[in-house]
Figure 1 (spheres, rainbow, N blue to C red):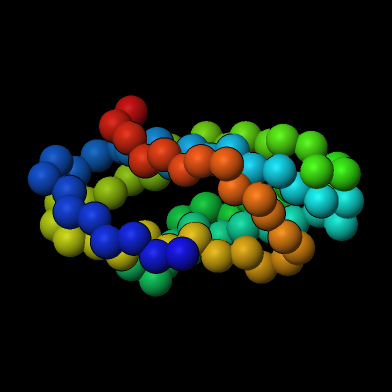
Figure 2: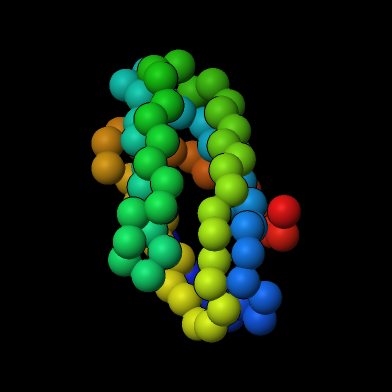
Length: 84
């Protein structure tokens, strides 16, 4: 999934998501402008709900935010990108 965003005020923002992860576990990657920003591995859990909340510095201007799964599977409930 890719999202375009425009940042008027550079600074720390919070990337958060809530997802269910299957028994095999899963890993996700978040990139800002094709640069790795967040990598998170979730333990195997028979579709247990997991949450992630992590700060991310975003400079002023136009950007591309990309979320990809590098291992396993997810059922994403929600994604939020907000000011810190």
